[in-house]
Length: 284
Image 1 (tube, rainbow, N blue to C red):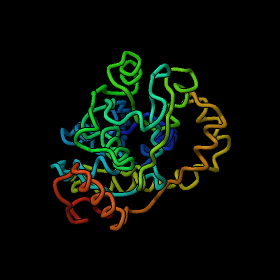
Image 2 (cartoon, rainbow, N blue to C red; image 1 turned 135 degrees about the vertical axis):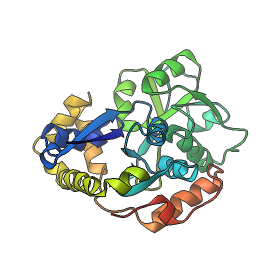
Image 3 (spheres, one colour; image 1 turned 90 degrees about the vertical axis):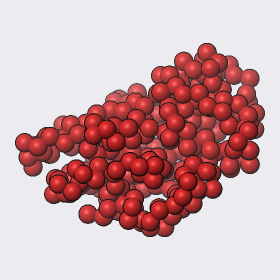
Image 4 (cartoon, helix red, strand yellow; image 1 turned 60 degrees about the vertical axis):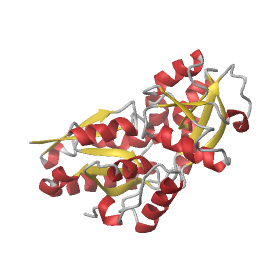
């Protein structure tokens, strides 16, 4: 049985992978798919793809595009979540900052450079007409646990992370959310190392067929809202709101979306140039 390693964030977006693994659907096709949680998010997954630690990743669209342009030998094979990611902008509960304008020139906590929390800080700054050179500063905190410690200790001033994932921390009075910043594009894609894809295309196609069959019907799974609430320590009403806002995809990401992401990253000086669609995406 062929072993294939895949990584993703341990969040509710990826529950479909857990369900298909639990049901033994990949093993039934002769594939030993092994899932690894990446608490450090997209930056950590990019490094794992580069180093061959994982073969596939469910990863933030803007993060993998930047890293492929920077030399990551991987390709996007499909959109996974079509809807935007809603990034909450958080401060410590007792922070002196009361509005997004107050955060201008302060220090953002980021999981690592090149991560979603890093890139979205630039997008948020642009939306508020901040100076991208003088109004942004960063503190690397590795993961959500590090952000709690960093904001509480005053090592950083604000932190951007998916709002429903951080909602329990807000409810517990550890963070305050000052606002939201949705991504201007589909939030998650599936990426595969090129060398792995070349020699294992059939297996990748089988994996996509299985996961797509589950995401197509995900919202109709009986009591799926309760399952998510229990597994991810969420309030039921928050899960129901999240489900109403989230749409999965079974399609290849289109050229216009790729162009939009690249144009945005180029304007923010996050990437040095734009590249052809075929350098980033490999339709199967």
